[in-house]
Every structure is written in structure tokens, then in C-alpha cells.
Length: 306
Image (tube, rainbow, N blue to C red; front, side):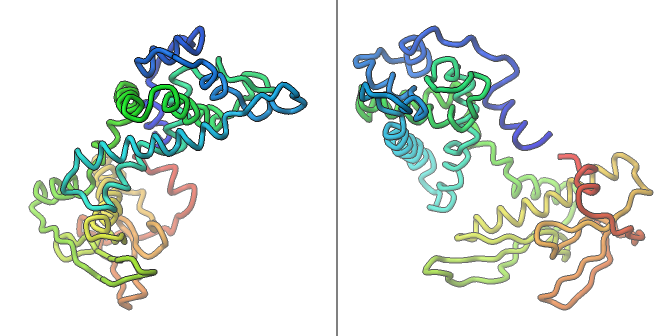
């Protein structure tokens, strides 16, 4: 299952909700508020295509989209700041990006039933996902104008939690923790080795390697050691997961040379070339030395199970 499908299942679920009958119904159901000035919300649901040839002074939702984007960002950022007092800037930014991103907004809009209310000079089935996501931000902007920041912030967080979008903050699928659990179960030593530390473009920059029993399984970069360790853990966990999946599936004959990321690190049963160290490794995770068939590209990805 792709990451997009996982996100769709998490945010949208398997059942499509009934479309709201009108904007008042939508605002009451999704934000728990009563509309005081309906004009804000009608503007939030007006796509720019409606302005073509219009002489009535109608406005599109683009300005409200801008306002809602800022209100959404600040609402989520404020909650994260309070909820994770020990988290540094890089970690908070990563958590926020899991909630405030285009795919999540597009899917939330579908879940809310916004396509049925959007005014646009196009067929309903032709309304793009991005149009729906933009309307979500515009609706948040309308709520802000109608009720102020305090009520808007609380309503937005409640809405995100109700749809399961905010849960992604806690679903790191903390690769570092998973890697630690796996290493402990396998009785292997896991360490994170700082490869490079310095500043780039005025910001801190770190490069960290995840090393298991003396073997580097993944490498990552970030603006903090913690962020770099998480990226290295993610790369390492991919290799561990692939190896474990093959082992449990009994795929002894399917041994291929696979490369991760930028082509600098291999996976189970591969020959690895690291230009920076000038070394070559033919060891695999289980310690055997299979022959590599150098299969790459789409064929490799089709066999991988996430």
C-alpha cells in the first residue's frame, strides 16, 4: 500500500460521508460553530473560474485561502509548541508538515463534502483535488473572519482530530524506536555515528549513520542530530524490513542488487560501493554472500512491500 493510500485510509476512511445540504450545515458539523456572516463562507466556496464574465463584483476564494493558510499554520504550530515542550524547531516543523500539507487538505475537503458546495464553472467530476484543498483553507479563513482566532484555532484542531489528521503527529512510525526494538530483539548493537557536523547556508547541518553491529545500514542528514538520526533510521529500517520480509517469505532464489536513495547504499544481499570511504561490502544482513543479479528500477520497487 502506498503512502498516499495509507493517508487516504487514515484521513478519509472507507466510507464517504453524506454531502452537507448547505454551508451552514457544513460549518456546524465540521467546526461546531454557527454562521454569523454567511457572505464570508459563500466567498470561500467561490472558485476563480466564476469570475469569468462576471459583472456583479463577485470575489473568488483566493484571498480567504491565503488567510486560512496562515490561520491553519498558526493553530497547528501553537498546539505542537505546547504539546512538545522539549522538541526543537526542526522536529516541530516535521510534525506540522504531517498535518498541514496539500494531500491532507485535499482529502479533508473530500471528507467534509466540500465538492458539493464549491461554485465553479466546471463539472463536479472535473473539480481537481487541489481546488478542494484550497477551499478548505478558504473556509478556515472565513471562520477566522466570522469568529476570531481563538474560536477558529480550537475549531480547526477539533476538526483535524475528528478526521484523524492530527493523529499523524504521533504516528512517526518512529523508525528510530522501531530500529532500537529490532536490534534489541536480534541482540545487536545499534549506534548512531555523526559523520559530519557543521553549518550550511547559516544553518546547522548534520550527517548521521545508523550502524548495527559495526555495519552501516542507513545514513541521513538534517538541521539537528535528532532529525538526521530519524532519517538514518528510516533508511536503515527499509533495509531491515526488506530483509525480514524476504526471510519470512522464503525467497531464497530472489537475490538482487538494490540501491537505496541516491545509490550510495545497497540493501540485503547486495554489493555496496561507498565512494567516500573507498570500501566495498559484500556482506548481507544475515551474513551470507548471495550472487547479485543487478535488478534495478521498477522491477525492484514492484517486489518491495511496505
